[in-house]
Structure formats: structure tokens, C-alpha cells
Amino acid sequence: MRLRPSGTAAVLVECEDLDGVLATYAAVRAAVDGDLVPGAVDVVPAARTVLVVLDPRTSTPEEVGGALERLDVGTADAVDEEDADVLEVPVHYDGDDLADVAGILGCGPDDVVERHTNGLWTVAFCGFAPGFGYLTADEGTWDVPRRESPRTKVPRGSVALAGEFTGVYPRSSPGGWQLIGRTDLDVFDLDRDPPALLAPRRRVRFVVAS
Image (cartoon, rainbow, N blue to C red; front, side):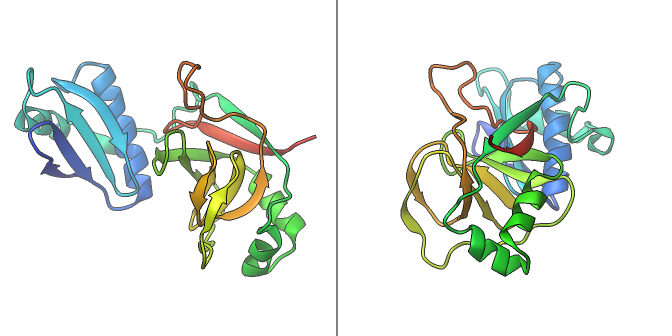
């Protein structure tokens, strides 16, 4: 675990890879929830880092760093299987890029759908827009390049692929991910508590919409 100060109100944990992020986030989140990291108020995972935000009125980066160094990240499960409820996301697999993605992967569109719906995905981290989760597959490695030319507007609810991740656009926005389908499920709603369905560590299964 490599720790870096981030101003006076946060400590950045650098990880080797995405698996390291998932394990580190799980360990830190559990420690913060158990009041084992003094002054920590938030934990934010990213692709290769985990940011631990603290309240500078009650703690310092040095105190938080000391607590983090005492964590046994190696024993943390990236996903708590007992507590993990699986969110089903119904998808209409009619995205504009589905055929292109099939060509990239050297298979047919139906094979892409079967692979996307086969097995579970885990939200590794969030970003880009409120409610946008980066989901990684439990089995199988995806490697889908972004579109050469991003779209100026991707419809809300679009289900897409980029790199090793899949995601659901929580609102209409520009985007360069490959669109393979769409869902009617509202993954982000400010009037809901919590607003985001796709929070880090959330388990997800994509299913073909009836």
C-alpha cells in the first residue's frame, strides 16, 4: 500500500491494479465504518487509487495514514458475497454499435449479448457523471476500444462498453463508449435514497429485457 498526502484533508492510496483497488476499498470502507480510521469521512475509489477524505478539524493526514498502514488489505474480500444483493438490469440489446463491437471481438451480435449477460459484474468505481459506474466482469476479459469519434449526445439509459468496463449512462451526455443497448431502469435519481443504484461494490447482472 503506497500512501500519498492529498492536501490537508485527504490521503491517496495507490494500488497496483483494479483488483487492488477493489480489495483496498473494501478494507478501508470497513475500517471507516468501524471507526478505525480517525476523522475519515469518505472513501472514493478510482481506477488505480482510493482516496480517503478526512475532517481536518478532527484528524490529520498523518493520523489517517497511520491507521491505513495498520489495515490488512490482503484479507479483505473485494465483494461481501453474503451482503451483496444482485441488481438486475434489463437491457434491450439494440445499440447502434452492437454490430461493430461484435466485429471487434470476432463474433456475432448474439454472442456479445450472451457474453454480456453471462455472469456477474461489479461496480469498481464511479466517475464521469453522477451515477455513472464503471463495472468490471467477474469472468472474461473485455477489451473494447472507445469510438474513434465520440458522440455529442448519448441517450440516457444507454448501455455501453469501453476497455474492460461496461456502464449505463445515467443521463444524456456526450460519450465515446460503444453502445450495445439501452435500459429503462433509472440508475440515478436525486429523489431516491441513495440516488445512485450503481455504487462501488454493487453486484449487477444484465438480463435481456422482455
